Amino acid sequence: MNSVLYLIYNEVSEEYGGKMKFAKFNVLKSDKNREIAIKYGIISTLTLMFFCDGRPIEGVTGLMPKEHLRRIIEDVIGKYQECLERSTKLAAKA
Picture 1: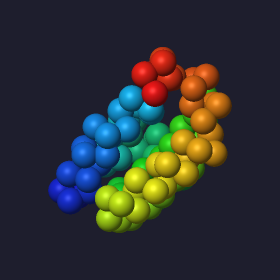
Picture 2: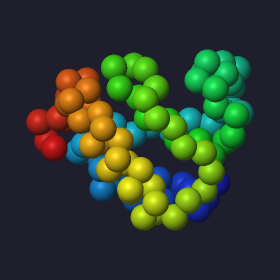
Picture 3: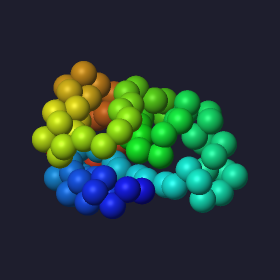
Picture 4: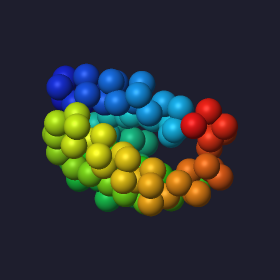
């Protein structure tokens, strides 16, 4: 993962950790990771995917400022709040 994106990702995942789960993986590290990337149409190593109930609901590609990423996350939370609350044990913390 790009070091700048890594720092932004870590900061934002701490901020929103009570509202959604965060995970990361290197698509180039193993065949299994490459299979996951192909399954979800990930063609760039700088891709963030949002899932709900095990299905992708949004995705963004490329390096972006932290504020822009926050706006995207807030938009996803707003649009999919019911699904996120239903599909995560973290909902009670939100």
